[in-house]
Amino acid sequence: MKAPYCQEGGIFFVTLKVAGWTDIFIRSEYRDEIVSNLNFCQREKGLRVFSFCLMTNHLHMIAGCEMGYLNSVLTNFKSFTAKKLMKMVRENPNESRREFIEDRLTFLSHVRQNDGSYQFWERDNHPVQIETDHFYLQKERYIHMNPVRAGFVHRPEDWLHSSANPECPLLIQRGDFLIGQSF
Image (tube, rainbow, N blue to C red):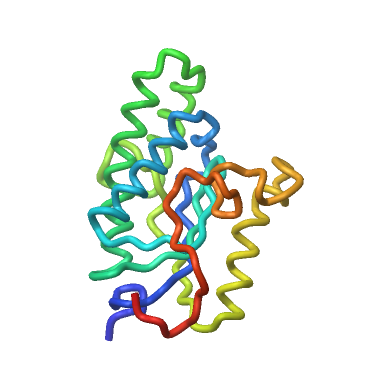
C-alpha cells in the first residue's frame, strides 16, 4: 500500500528545509527564484498551493496536485531549485557567504553519505495529510504565524513571502476550503 503522500488527490502540510537549516533565503533574488519555480510548478505540473510561507531556511505549504503525486512534483522542484540556487550562490558577486554555504552543504552531503557533491534540501518533506477543516485552519495559522514567531514582523500580513500577505508574489488558491472537495 502506498503512503497517502504518494496517492493522488490528497492535500498536505509540507515543510521543505534547506540542509542543516542553512539560511539561504535572506537574499531577495533567491526568494524570487523559489517563488518563480513554485509558479512554474503550478502552471505546468498541476501544483495547487493553498497556503505558504517562505522563511530564511525553509518553506511551509499546504498543497496538493490536480493530477499526479505531490511528492513527484516536490522532488522535481527540489532537484531543479537546488541546482539553480547553488549556481546563483556561486555566481553572485555580492554573496559574501559563498564559501560558507558551499562548505556547509558539501559537508552535510558527506556526513549523510549522499551521492552528490552537496545537499541543498533535506530529503524528507514531513508530509501530513489534511483531513479536516479544523486541521487545515490550524496548519494555515501555524504557517502564517511563522515569521511573527521568528520576530521578523509583528503581523503575518506584513511578511511578503506568505499567503497571509495580500501582495504575495505566489499564486494562491483562494476561496473557501472544504475537505473532500475535488480540484
